[in-house]
Amino acid sequence: MNHKILLSLILLLCLLVSTTTAFAAKPIINADNTYYDVNTGLYMLQGNVYIEVANRIITAGQAKVSLSSLEVWGSDGITLSQDHIYLTAGSVYVYGRQNKAMLDGGVTFKQPNLTITSDTANFNWRTKLGIFNGQVQITQGDNTWSADSVTYNIEANTLQ
Image 1 (cartoon, rainbow, N blue to C red):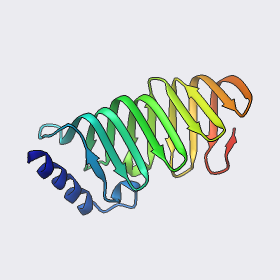
Image 2: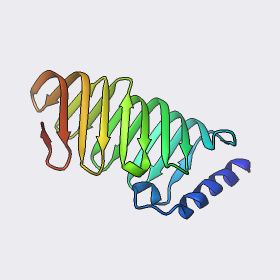
Image 3: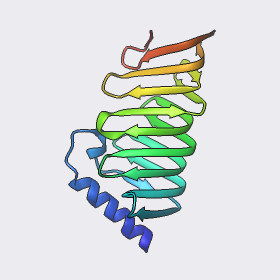
Image 4: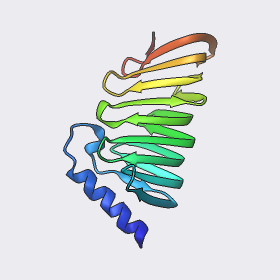
């Protein structure tokens, strides 16, 4: 019962926060265990974490969510998907108000006919750019190559 009350409170607070970011949309948040840490102002989520905002979905083993700053810190088997984009990583930090995400711990980006692996990645939903750094491996069609860094324009479907 406390779990349902907490999730209802999270949804209500999200509706009261007025912003033009993706986090202004009514989120769906589920986890095996949830609690609110009054000392930090963070919702703590553990086990089978599922966060959906608009058409963006984050799954994790554990996460912390700040409704006031619209930030998400997730770890333990991260997936981030939206439309035809799919990412996996060890951890993620989402800046909700800025529409940015930093991924770490071995990142894999998959899209039809393109796979990029790297140590870290930064995504910006406003500019539609993904920047991959550290031991970057790109597979596009039948071609595979390595780089120290690569930028992918999601809208134009081009590597820079």
